[in-house]
Length: 96
Image (cartoon, rainbow, N blue to C red):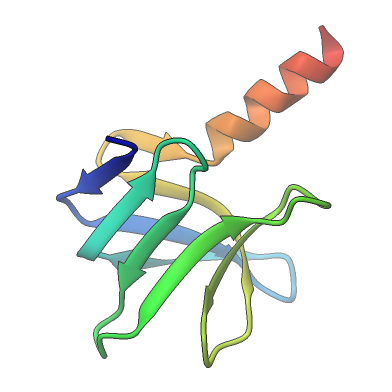
């Protein structure tokens, strides 16, 4: 199965307009598609959110249907860090 059910609270680190990074926690219905890396989850109001990668820029965005997309720096679930590691792997491939 290509879907990873994450049964713990995760911290999503968002890049703010001034360049600073803040985080919010997600814990409701958190899932990750292992093939694409896309995360989906629900917020406290029950709205469905997704974190997807822009194919042109490579940046990751958190978005919901009625919210503007926000740039995601990384996602931390327990001792596992997502997105940040993938960026590092891409850099190593480009250099090597």
